[in-house]
Image 1 (cartoon, one colour):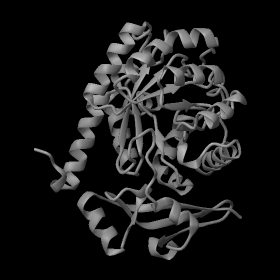
Image 2 (image 1 turned 180 degrees about the vertical axis):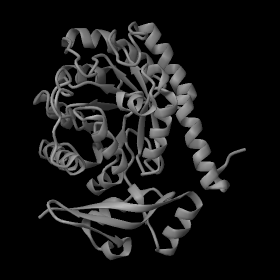
Image 3 (image 1 turned 45 degrees about the horizontal axis):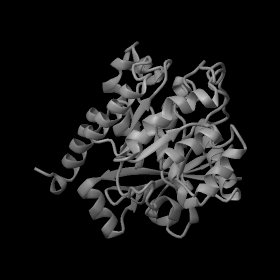
Image 4 (image 1 turned 90 degrees about the vertical axis):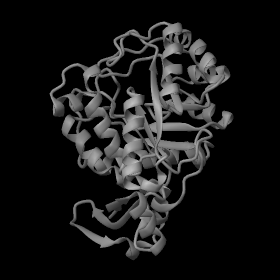
Length: 345
């Protein structure tokens, strides 16, 4: 029977550093400012129990949870980083095609970097629910010039699931590949990443964007997504991709109901057991509108920032967001108020 471990009783900032130093808390995701004092032990089809973290100190999964992650894309994973979204698409669910030309996308990317985004995620194919795929040629035409312009001064990731687009994006200067299919859409993608020796984000999705929201089903969404991501990591490693180049994303909104998205958000800390950096992208998504009552995606800023803080409080290493300025400011205030000595006046 498989066992899962979810860190609980989280402490932050100054308290976390003190508790970790005293040996009464573990470092969540290798972060010295987020600690946990207890662990929920879950077994499929059986009960669950909570134990002090010290009871698991020799456990392999415990070591995965607490070890410092290697740098990803040139960024240390010692605290939450903000990735700004640059959608160069005419049918984005949130931007409505506002950045559908290269000049507008480049300008927007530079603005996000100015606001504090440390990674710019450039995508040329919408993967919103119900969306259709676009050709390799069209996707490349949308993103290559944008990546080339932004990569001169910024860390750029390419949001694509196609091997040829990945190659074109890397030639243009992208340093990270962000694949919503976890390299499963095209078999050649794994070879591209392995040969290029570049960081890759493996996201969980149930089904294709066109149909993924029709009737998503899970036995236990938190554990099922964990298993799927564990399998994706194993397949990537078997293809020659270094574990140090892998980041995972539970895929909020990709083949999940609104309730399932909230279940994932509540249990994000479990994914630290996989021992790699974690990314979460919930910005402006439909379940936020369901909770807050905001029907327009662009009006879901406050709900998105609230979700981003919840993710940061669970040790998420990268937050993929539309509203960079609001998210960065919220993170700064949260950090300063939990660790006054960190405030930079």
